[in-house]
Image (cartoon, rainbow over all chains, first blue to last red):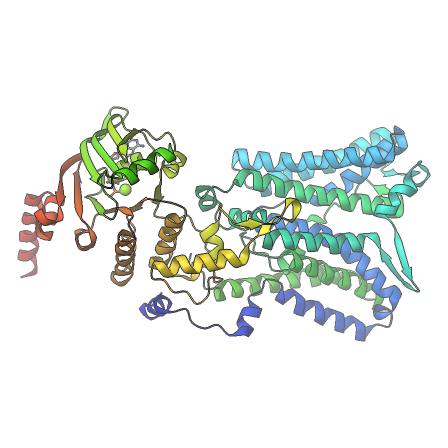
Length: 346
Length: 272
Ligand SMILES: Nc1ncnc2c1ncn2[C@@H]1O[C@H](COP(=O)(O)OP(=O)(O)OP(=O)(O)O)[C@@H](O)[C@H]1O
Ligand SMILES: [Mg+2]
């Protein structure tokens, strides 16, 4: 830190260029990348821009997007959750087993699954806060526990590794209205999950930027010691965030279950990193305290477009992984640059 | 209790905000502080000086409610008090600005200013931050302290050390502090930055607050202080009014005069 810069900051804040201000928005990098991917696949393939094509990648993006938004809030709060992917399976399997095997009312099963998911989220948060262990380790253990239970319990109860006969359960069609509706405009079909995704992104953004709770999320992730000193309920805030990712896992579990009427015991395994990557591509810092829900939603949009675009272009599917890795590196580099531009002298 | 204290101020401005008599603090068998007297009125700066381990932090932790005294009395506006927690002290109008300032570097100045005590408007689920009001108040309050920020939206991490210190002071003043304790606010700062903070201390004093300023640098203490409490190995070397002591005497007292004289002698020889 040279004396010159110190004095400059002392006297008067240097006037910032509007472009620099725009570039400092956490989601701007992702927005530019999304546009590039959109243009790329629109020009490369016929199917991408057709109403049916758009429906496909929007649907794909929505399921990742719901998770990514919740994960981004948790990451802004300075924590990780590796159990999110398995959670989407667990919630779906719970409802499936309860409804098909024990003939519990579907609405009740859905509610019980929600309560159980939130409970698992609260458990993750509580253990992390009580022990002071990295959430990475705590949720890694939850991930393995859930993965094991998903397979073992499903096999034990149903004798197979998937839930069948869900669509014959009484009340299935009613619940499907909420989670599995499709609104058609000609060839374009708008699925319920897309609406959930948009609504959730809007609510999350509002909470983060315009409520006390949101202020606390940034604070506990940015500097939890300071937050505690000024009276922010750090433990409560973080536990709520873990419950948020688990709750999103429940929602995605329901959206898939009531869309296709079946769920595999391996559902969601390995997806947890994709959610984190979407959040990082959307501008979340791995160190916490910075990021955006809209950015995470755009990150998921990029992933959804690439996922389906590669199929439409008839490329080898394995390119997706390579693409994902490259995106992640690029995003982290952009974030690093932004953080430096923000001029934070920690 | 707070109503009580408010009455006391109005009744008699001559009553010190804080008066401590015969304060002692033992940590188990070790004695960190013994027989310390001090007092401070509104609009005054009390400097607490001493070498490392002299007991300065122990002294302020008792005032801030982080520790309780083993012996002695502590009176706020003439009422004997014993703070069970930092919250207690805060409620009595005593705010402490610690070295780490309790700010979140990546968050904007105004968000930091109101963190934990945000202003909201609206109802139920629509209760939201009153952003405009908070920005305006933060800007105004900082202006009162002499910091004229063009943009309270910038991350607080981009401010200089001295400015951040001042934001922390302004924040405690705005939230009702009558007495602000600053634990070594200038020790990590350069000459110029330290000057900035000293100016804000003077500003807070002129605004009618009491300021307790902890430092081990007599050159920082002397220009702003009204009264100096010098601690040495847990004992008070006296509470001196500014009129009664010169900066040279202060320095000498602080470091155990004789030792310093011989050190100066030694250094002089070495340099010739
Ligand atoms: N919690 C504690 N338990 C036991 N001894 C303590 C404790 N806190 C402080 N002490 C002792 O009390 C004495 C005074 O410590 P204090 O922290 O008040 O010094 P200080 O004047 O603030 O020093 P510095 O300038 O280094 O900050 C020291 O000898 C220290 O070891
Ligand atoms: Mg100290």
